[in-house]
Image 1 (cartoon, helix red, strand yellow):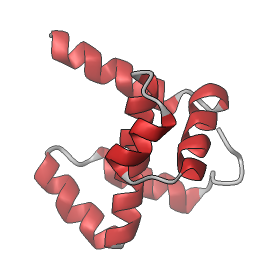
Image 2 (tube, rainbow, N blue to C red):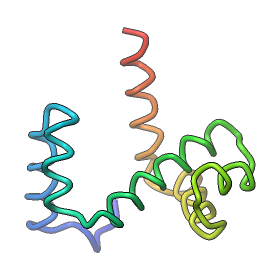
Image 3 (cartoon, rainbow, N blue to C red):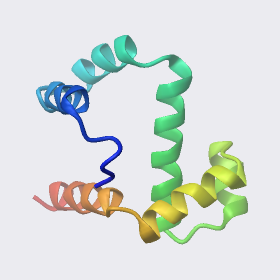
Length: 99
């Protein structure tokens, strides 16, 4: 975990996020916390990560998501050298599908 982001305020934010139970609650909270562009950027990065894991090409990903090649590269670097956060979530979602 990046020590630069750790702190009491970030802990409080994450604790708040962990209380959310439904997609509607997420919409309500994140629409209050984020700008529309911030939320769309986060969701775009997540879609890019999913498509990279599906072995889609940068061109396919850019055309499908509108993400720049710089964004795709940044997400790819996180997938390969990051903290495995994407992989953790993907695995949990996959397990949830099979339950």
